[in-house]
Length: 327
Image (cartoon, rainbow, N blue to C red):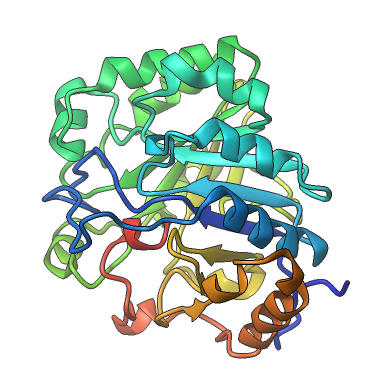
């Protein structure tokens, strides 16, 4: 079948699949008051529904699936989901983004199930600041989880750090020291404006560009981007085992290389992290014989994908917070 492609000739190799919008952390930039729902029991995608949507994407050129949340490991069937996705013909990378609270206990099990890549959110190496940002006193537990993941054979861990002015923006030396002898790709992510976080954004947003330029002056070298990589601009250094990536959504032409689509935990296709209300897919995930109609709806939706987000205009669309569609 034809590769998923939009009207700007961007091809989509990468699916971010949210499994739940529930999270057990209360990060200041995402869910400062914790997870709340109006539904008594939210109906997230079932295993058969997940299999059908992943199969459709795989049949149209997607080779990488990232399992996100909320916190995806809160799903009791998380290992089964990993196995299902990793067993889908055409999928060669199965990644997850996690807050790391369950990593120490489950890293080996997840690797055995077929997980290939892990991103862990660690917004500070200071336990007190970590607690302040995440709302949870679990820094040492998360760090043990990263150590365990490396020990059971994950060749590189990516660590996400949301840059926050006045909170963690002066901790670069500590982060650099940490990755000198560890195979960790540290990823600095610029704070993004969302509907519920306007005041926080204006108070704490800081650009990653100055840090990026400083590191280049210090001998860090840009790394070539692979087709299924995310939007990070990655730097390497001969004296460091680790790498440093920057995700800067306010940078000019950030969306030019977009290669991912998102499906929410309730079965909506999102063409962008910001913007539209989503395209309903769930009615076409109920039976195996609806694959052609599912693929046709996704491809039709791609015709509506905009050339860029509108964050530069202060427009975060209908996204209330990042946990709502999987970040």
